Image 1 (cartoon, helix red, strand yellow):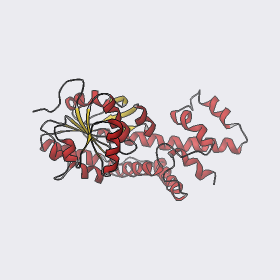
Image 2 (cartoon, one colour):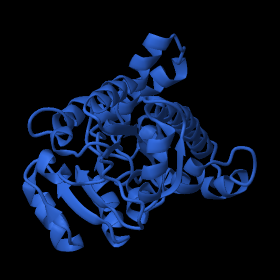
Image 3 (tube, helix red, strand yellow):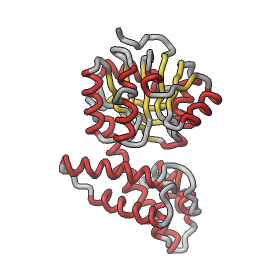
Image 4 (cartoon, one colour):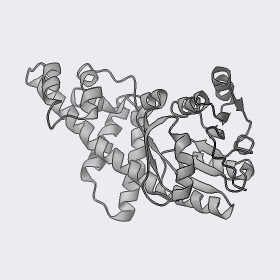
Length: 296
């Protein structure tokens, strides 16, 4: 029997309560969904329940039991497999027809692997990486890129919108992850260009804030310029999407490019620049810290 009920609220589980998962699960609770959470560090799950209500579970399997939709947002492919597969994994506890929605930024390969495993177990799977960073998760305005079957997506999408401002199905399993790769390619080149522009403006003796105010109204304008330009100019990076996370994402997409033959010379170069930022002690700095390596 399909565990999803076409009602306003749903019984759901959320696996992974990091800087993204915790606020995302919180929005589900605020919208009135019945939320059970799991986190490898149990104290985090207990703190989340104290702040948001719902309940915590000792294993992904226990968290997933009886849920219409199980969400996950963990670190990488191996982390994802560890909460999904095996005797204590979520798939072992889910009812026939239930939906697993993965918000981890992972490989398209693991998305297809887990989609096939779900299908074999009578379950359904959506890969659904997000963009918008910690602030987007906290404010409930993430962009969600999905891969999977249309009917499955149609059931999951209204619940996903608890923490999203945009959600779209892009194609079959893996398409969400591939779209997130496109997103990160676009961001990498853009942030490097903005870094060089600000660095140049400083060396030229310009009032960089005034320059950014002018050019942001024209063709050079972007989300990065609007939201990161001034902090980059002020050398402030202790917030936002961490360099080490971006490097993880770039590693995934560069591996995919080697499989599909795409040529990404600028992205590969920016990945090397981020490695330099890490060597400077900037693993946890915001991705806009690319400018720091120019100003050493």
